[in-house]
Structures are given as C-alpha cells and as structure tokens.
Length: 275
Image (tube, rainbow, N blue to C red; front, top):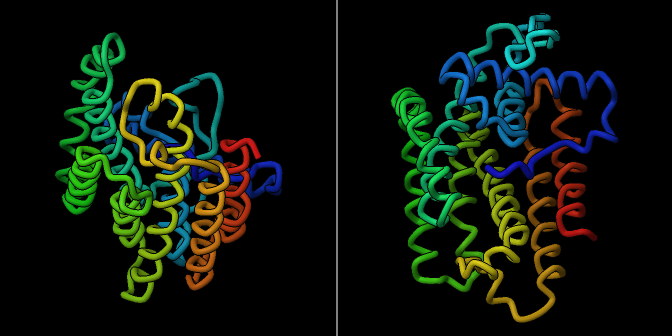
C-alpha cells in the first residue's frame, strides 16, 4: 500500500493516539523479528490500520509492555505483548513491498533503477519467507500485479478498470481478518472500497510525474476537471468504506478505526488534493 490510510491525529484523544503508536511500533518490531532489520522499511500506517482491523474483531487483548526501541536504543517504546495477530499484516507488508520493488525496477531508469536493483537482494529472502508462511497473500498480490500490468500494457483509459486490481487485492487481504462468512463478506466490501481510494489517490499524486516521464496513468485520459472528478470518486469510496465498517462487530480500537475511516481518509484526501 502507499501510506494514504492514516489517522487524523489532531482529532485523536491522547490515549487513542498512544495506542495507535503502540500498534505501529509493535508492527515494526514484528517485521524486524520475522524478516530482519531491513524489513522495517516496509512499515507504513496502511499496515498499522490492517493490524488494528485484524485485532479489533477478536475479544482477547494481550496487553502492553515498555521496552527499549530497536531503532532508537536510548528510548523506550510501548509494545503489545506477543501477539499472533500482527503476523498476517507483517507478511502482507513484506510481500507487497517486494512486488512494489519489482515494479519500480521495471518502471524506473538511470540511478533510481540501479538503486532498486541493488537493494532487491536484501528483501528477496524476507519475501520468500513471508510467501511461504502466507501463500494465500502471495497469490493475491501476484495476481493483482499481473492484472495491473496487463491494464497498463493496453493503456486502459477507464479509471474503474484501472483501480479494480488494487481494490480486489485489498478486498481479499481484508477478508483474512474475519472469522465468519458474514465478517469476511463485509470486510471484502470494505477492502474493495478502500483499495479504490488508495489507487485513485495515488494515481492523482503521481499524475504530474507520470506525464513528465511518459508513464501510464489512467487520469491522463481525463480531459478536464481532474481534481473535481477524483474528489467525487474518493468521497464515494470513503462513504462506502465507512458504511461497510459500521456492519462489523468491532470488539476494540473502535474509536481509532472510526478516526481513520471517517476523518483520516478525508483529511488525507484534502491534503493530497490541496482542497
């Protein structure tokens, strides 16, 4: 994912922000423990949201503890105690980063391309480990990348079609957080809408550079009112994501999840679109 699923921190209570930060730091710790220190570079608030969502539907809570930070050894951070629910988001982060790295190698030229080629070996083993542990996520992401590349190759002009592979991938990954069929169905809808939001917002943010470098971007085919068009689409995505989440029986972190979906997505959109 791309870092667009984040909280509106100014609207968070202190205890909610502290728990949000705790989950972020705990996911960082999980990545380092399972996939090595370089894996921490995969960390983003997108996967913090996935971790929160994955834990929110379970009744049990492992509690927290204070320990020295692995990245800044002179300070202490609050972490969740050993928690298996962080493993799936960590693997998803690792797998998606690796495929993003391959995509960057294919798209970039010059020094940037060389840089990505040089760092690829540091993530190859970690990707293999994550893919072995979660072959379902590997399959989801590999199929998403394949579909996306096919659309880019044919220079698809439809925003809806171009956004569909990302939306379907997030739908399937979100569904892994559920236990019952009802939960999975709702989570798929939520993930699909959020996936469209991520793809369309990222396409808008990359538009200027993609035009300059003559790279594929479905928004290049919009003749006028690009910002207004995207804003309207993103608002629909936000509304439908929220409507789906309201159908879930959330056991914990509800205020944090509400902040991200009902305030954070809109706040991020307005900042990125400068509206």
